[in-house]
Image (cartoon, rainbow, N blue to C red; front, top):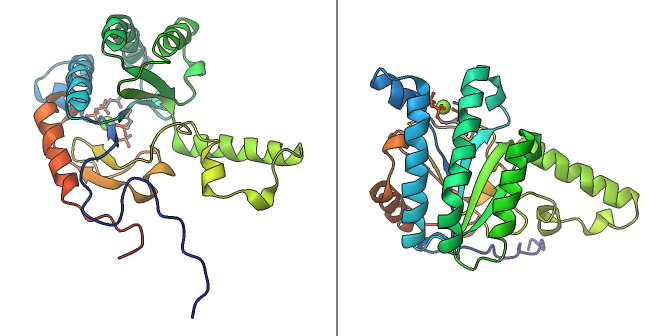
Length: 249
Ligand code: IPE
Ligand code: IPE
Ligand code: MG
């Protein structure tokens, strides 16, 4: 008889048919290819991508998704040409300015994960302003990953754990998954149920590596600017048929 205690059951699934996801994350990829196919500059694809963000975040709320996490800018995206980075920052600025009223009206809480403080000071201020204004909203949560990289997030958490241990406020013997998660950017979000990547690429590109441990993965060929409420609904029905086991039967 093996005496190792069973790990606590994970929230978000009971080992049966998945049903409806609480927390969906999307790697919004393919803006550049969408533009290229139309002989347009890449920025045109990013602009259309912002339209998709508007449509899909609205659809997610209508479909009852509690938390939608969108990968908007990775810590590796700084490797792109400065002109493209600046276009992306401009679109983010416009998105925050234009969407804030709708988010407030709809009772959406905006959260940001990633090192957004490294963005330009006016953007940092805008981000913090929207987050503050929607802090107590009781509707859905929209999480935007800005200058986010999962390895860096995990390292930062490990560093804070080490500091807490050094300062005697955390006993290393009590460190487990649940305690460690309180140090991650996603500490106040429900477990990730479904991770979608558009554009046919099949990799995580440093997105939510810890959180995806038991998430269902869905790779779709649709380019992000073409993704809409119907594509999201189709993704949810495909998720609903998955059998989540969490290591059990
Ligand atoms: C996703 O589209 C947007 C960001 C990464 C900011 P891409 O710009 O990566 O589009 P492709 O992959 O070049 O088609
Ligand atoms: C991932 O897309 C980042 C975002 C969607 C923000 P990329 O297009 O940057 O990923 P790679 O470089 O193809 O892995
Ligand atoms: Mg890409």
